[in-house]
Every structure is written in C-alpha cells, then in structure tokens.
Image (cartoon, rainbow, N blue to C red; front, side, top):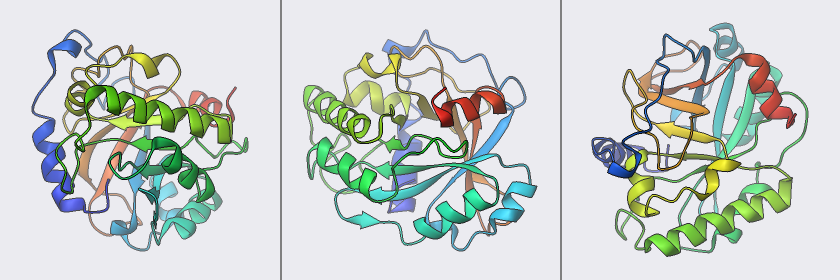
Length: 250
C-alpha cells in the first residue's frame, strides 16, 4: 500500500509469515466465501487511471484510496479517484501511509485531514485509515522506534485525527508488525476499526487484543474490471447496511 510498492510488498509478505504469540488465540471465524460478503479494494497511483463505473458494476462496494504519506506527499491520483469513486456509487475512504520516524503523529494526522482525509455523513465516506506497516525505507522494521514510542506516536495520530474529524480512524496493519512494534498493545481496539492484512484464505491470528476484524485485505494480486493490472482486494466483515452505518457514524 505504500509509496515504494515492490519493496514494501516484500517486507510485508515476510512479516506476515510470523504470528506473534500474544495474538495466537484470536482466530477469525470468516473466510472470503463465508461471513464477509461485501467486497472492496484499495488503490493508489500504482493502479493508474481507473474506470470507477466499471469497478462498481463489477460488484466492488467500497475502496480505500491513498491520499497522503508522511508530511509532504499527496498521491497524484487521489483527487480524481476520490471524486470518481463517489460519483460511481462506491463507498470510499482515504488512507495515510505512516512515517513515524519523520514527524509526530499529530503532524501527519493534520496533513491527512487537510489533504483528503476529512469526513462527512453522506453514506459514501468512511473514516480515514492509518496505514501502519513494515518500514520500506531505511531506519529499521519498526522505524527505529521503541514499543513505547510507537504507541505514543499512534495515539498522537489517532487523537489528532479524531479532534479534526470527529471520527475514530481505521487502523491498517499486520499482526506481526503490530505485535512486534507496539509490544502487543491492545489500547485502540475498543474504538478503532481493524483493517488487517493477511494474503491467505483465512485471516489467522489478529493483533493482540483485537476482538474481531472490520476489514480484511486478503490478497495483493486481485483483478477487477476497470483496473489494469493487480489490485489489493478486501472484505468488510458484515453486510452493506453496517458498512453504511460506519460511513455515517450511526
């Protein structure tokens, strides 16, 4: 999902092979063919120009769209994707690729909120997602932060985003990254929807303390009409009415 897609995929794929023991008992009950029946995607500039009408006609009901990264990068395709997805009837949300080693969480949350991550109760706008995963740049797997520093950074981001928008941000992560880099922190899961990445036929173990998943990215090599090449595929853990309720904060 990040800016340097190929290197990030390699790092994340490697991370996904490790299941942290703190989350070993939290096993999901749904598979792609079972309870999760609302399909979605996530996209960035790597998907090029997207025909969102074709995407919606193919059955895709929601999309997370890359908006920002760090403190200064805005995806060049975000504005077109965000508007065109909405106009095609796709429930959409923005996402921010976190760079915890270059600024405070508050700075990056404000950057997101000011560059596409705002929210409105229009039945088609999800709260934005914080994309927190293996560092694809220099500085170490956990961005050189201790578990305490990572927790503080994430909390700073989440608090600031909620202050700006009134919504609890979605958190995208992998079980292995979360448990290693936050020290199996359980704090956010009372309020913040979990978007878990695991490219498999089952979700597997969830991050420590997470009682369930809300979104599941189950492959990075999906195909959808209206998009050239591979695209990440996701499921919402519920029906469409509950997804709209999340969008509207009801």
